[in-house]
Length: 463
Image 1 (tube, rainbow, N blue to C red):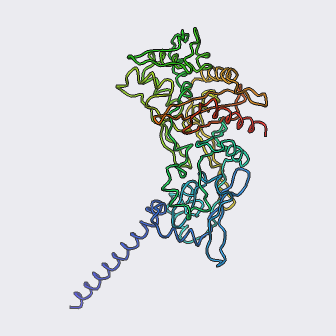
Image 2 (cartoon, one colour; image 1 turned 90 degrees about the vertical axis):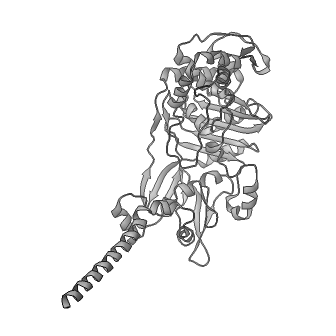
Image 3 (spheres, helix red, strand yellow; image 1 turned 120 degrees about the vertical axis):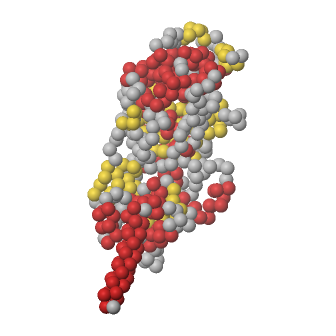
């Protein structure tokens, strides 16, 4: 009798122990394995509480200027997230609001700013549950004076400006307009989400635009690689499949080279020469600039759209060769092209976070190459041609420093233009690259994108 009772007690003890272990493992599963996903989930109420009761780390520019910080409220218990500028950095810092969620750097680097461990090591995770450390500060590659100058230079235009170092990929300025008042977000929220202006869109990395003639830089690499005869008799018009296109202003340039085709921005040249380039060759050039390669970036980004696929007609390919047709590029992808030409074919990964300061222990971003497959001789050749292009079209810098650049006027379905300008200097060994995009303009790139890009590049070189 006693043996039966003891066996029952042992069985109960085993069941209770098993249940206890199951509950413990269940909790550890969420604390250790599922923690990353749950911490990122905007529905996580704990995050809302952390945003109010925990002091988040600051966001600063490269030189230590504070851009976002947590301010202790009068109750001495809760914090309010504040931003040093209403509009200037809204597309970069984004926002952190317990009711509206997170965007931008605030979202991507939430683990650092909120001191949520992102180590995969189980022992580090367990230690973070029983110890407290201060939240990390995030230092950007942005230089405040360059950001301010680029912001003012863009004026009232819709669009974006990116300024980058082609030898590292570091972004010194990344402007998006129209923007929003990040310090008045709650009051403006309903108006912002109802607006068709896309104020919350980060145009440099999420905007998709017809590239127009700026895409001729990509086509030029394909032409050089092909070994084709690069001379051409430009009669001012060209016809493929009963579709005729003209040069801007219906100009005819006669016998021209690739260099002159870029200088004059001859549509007919690129239209006709595209017949000798396959879809695969175009796709390979894009890949070799790093476009379509996935890379870590601290802001949301979209992928460009290209038509170079099986079944593409000669007419569609010809239109794409000078940046028209079913083609849409992001300014960030155009930045890869510009940096590749500027840096002798070597394209660095763009990055916007320079250092994460974890309680005095600084983790710097190490520049890394995204692609090095563009031939150095072709990159140098095209850069020389783009130097001639700038000189011929009068896009010279006031400082007298030689620059290399190309405009693009992408005609959109709504009858307006999406204007581009890529520019780099000094032309022989560029230190900076500027990409300007102006959305929905009645003018051409010659009238707005080019002078704006030249002003910004001139400023960066002569600060």
